Image 1: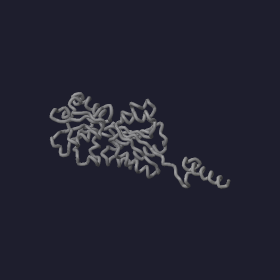
Image 2: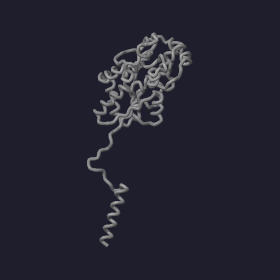
Image 3: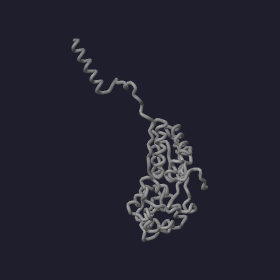
Image 4: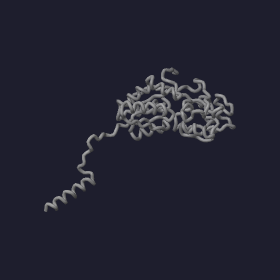
Length: 267
């Protein structure tokens, strides 16, 4: 009987071990770190990622940066109701979607400005003239205004200039965002594009493009507003991120990536 009892006890112990029932967490086991989620327009991904590394170390947490077109990102956060911060490529997104109640407080983290980009050395000798975008002898790639902030900004600029429909008709194809615009130019699929100027200064684009700057009266610098989401799981950390991004230290990082800092006034 004692042998049978011991066998039964051993069998039960083995069963509990296999099923995990009754097990306790090992001594000293730690819960997983909090994870902050930021929805970031592609153009601003470099400075936001750099700041994320600083805040991760400071607060001992993980920060995930979800990159994409500003419109696509908003629709994603609206659908999922998950995340903490949203940085679109233009303040117009905040104005448009504020009534939804998903965007809380914000900080101004600088300006983005559109410019004409051409291959390094400007082989075709082009000027900073929006009429170049309708020339039949030039390959032009444009951005869809319904997906990316540069598409929306391009539409605004070109409609004011008076040649938006002509440019869209002259484009060899449309892309979804600033990154794909630059890829088209780098791959030789375009001779000239209208894109966010800061992207020409990113490490992956260094030495590839020349910037043809447009007059601010034509291409108005656009405010970049970093918004906290009203359903943020970590509002205290999100606000710390916002504070740092808008600080002199954070603004130096933005300047390193070609953005105009928040001390300038254009409106």
